[in-house]
Image 1 (tube, rainbow, N blue to C red):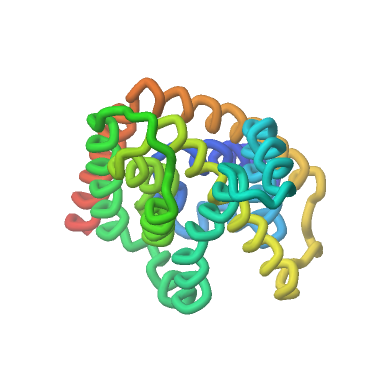
Image 2: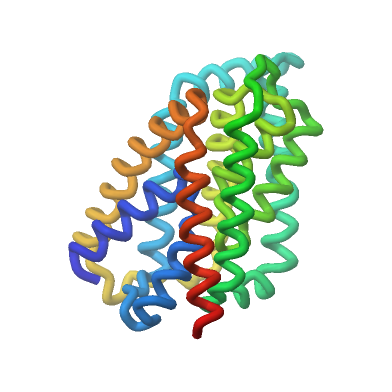
Length: 264
């Protein structure tokens, strides 16, 4: 993998991890349009590095919140901080179950199934449109909400469903404050990313052979910087109810994908 490829992949990962456009869906579209051999197949090590970069960018953006939550939770008092951590844990349950028991079935869906991607992008578009029209409140995410949002995160494993779009939209439609919904959405995925990284490392499948550490470092930096930008921008967009632009984008790309699949 050359330097240009690593920069492009890093930027795509950093942006699509937070912007509600579905990174997996766009990858499948790219593979179908350009051909599998035309898309650089990054190693597992490179993939792990990019995911670590976006997780790190989330931690940097929410560093004050995370420190406050951890300090509060260490007091072992039943306060908002301890409850927030437990809500994050509850939200992880559906994704962990799907990941452990349906991993092979999910992998079979990532075979340039353009019709599925198109339909899922339309669903993402509808979710974003409805969330943008919802009235803002001061409500925080409850334990019941956390589990429901976790279900939407698990469903977002399907190619074409945006993880951030699905979780933020679900939270807002449940009547939660938009800024708090975005904050919860971005923080709830961090433990899952680190868990997946740990699983990949322990699996022994990661190889450093034929890997350019220059390209790896540059890809990491590109994903980290793009992640900082996208995470901060997305919070502002949700707060100002500007998700409709992404709703239209997903709808247009989804319709094009459906048309492309029907004509081929």
